[in-house]
Length: 253
Image (cartoon, rainbow, N blue to C red; front, side, top):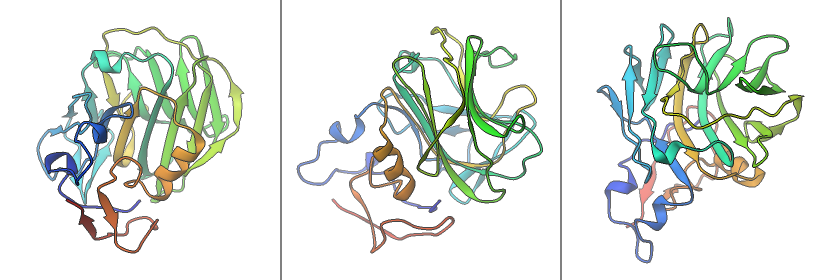
């Protein structure tokens, strides 16, 4: 994905006619830009106010965060704004260092144990797929990432708990069409860690919504990740970019 470095617009005066509140709504409950260059916390730029705590020493890397296994993760405390059990969307950019095992993307469950409220992960075999799993069932869509390449991945939980998985802006057909339901609980969320399914690679631009994003919105996030939810950021002469391209930005204020 484009590695875009900027001062977050939430910290600056919005352009004329755009209120700060209107730019922070639209259902976003967690937004981690992951542009910090140090420290053990990542700021939540949404109105959900759900900061993440870096656990077991993941490393900052060129405007993204690198998880190296060994239970490295972003730990997110439970909150009222994260009480969704359907009608939600999770999305982010992921770059896999290897495909030697299954990889946790986002999980809700106890911070130190192996219990699962829900688990969104890349399943390495049987066949390789993106999967949302709970004790009540699983939904899977065949997908094999390319090692060393940024992929935009998204998971949409519909009102009936049917699942839509997207890879690089494209809706993947379900190979297993289960209905993974769950009940809200007080367990934390985390990014990148469950049992032996540690994520190994880079992550960036993690966002959770309390609503269903449609296919057009998902495609727009893939083609131009800033334009949808950061209207004040204008790329110079580029609508989309290949992975790992730095694009200068103009801040409109």
